[in-house]
Image (cartoon, rainbow, N blue to C red):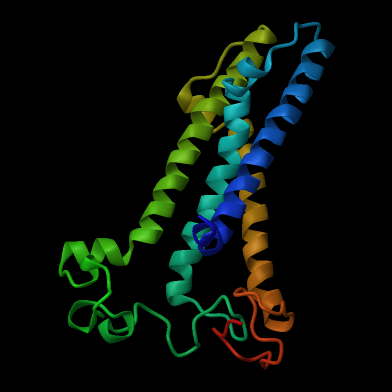
Length: 224
């Protein structure tokens, strides 16, 4: 058990932090929701009802979709684009899909390579792009969840204000949907750009996301 925890400490730590923060968001969101309910002269709702509400689902999904969009774009763009001096970039002379030998696929696969790395055709194509495809799929599903939950929450407010609810087509072009979406996209894109550029000149000793402390600023694709 101790060995398992040590060898998986990064994933376990972030998983635990995720649960703690999600629970914190639920309680904070409930307090905010009930405060608005009281302001409008409406009754408070329970914790159970809140975490199954469209309002909570929309708030969660809008953050998830932007995070996975960030990963999806970063995974695919770093195949072709480089950033001189950044450990987040491949070497300047390695843009593109790289050779089968470099990627250890087909006849160049190692003994312990995954079985699909030795495959050909569609299997190899699918496995070669599986990380990006999964991130992209989670992004689209999360964005769809945000759309569905966001529309439901928006229409609940519309009905509360004695106004007509919006159809799916109407909500797709509504400011509420795109405000929820774009406010998250811009922050994620800024974070990725900041990491890629700041890591050129700044260091974090011992981190896999940083160059060695003594590495030259121009060293590209070098991690500590």
